[in-house]
Length: 131
Image (cartoon, rainbow, N blue to C red; front, side):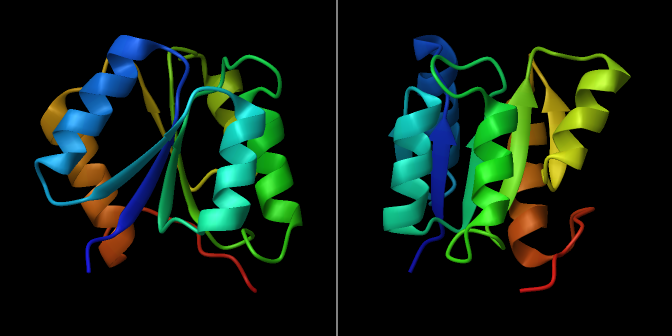
């Protein structure tokens, strides 16, 4: 069975890019275009990994990440933030809210595939949480 990746991204071109790139590597891709829908999908569908944008309509990515960590059913889902917000302060906030890794846009297809595969196999630089 392939790993399930939920992409929460409101930009259509970035969403298509991520969906295509990761499907080519055999991942099952689920998509949400805003934070609230993404949060609901994460709770109901239990993906193996979430790729999360920060600037989203409704709930922003920081809020989504924080809420994911508060719920027992999603507390240990891997979260990779992929955002245009590239300042160190933005990255620090993302990690403080519970992200496991943070990449900035634009991202190379090889880089995103390697990061996702590394996180899912445990060879990526990931902070694991207690259940």
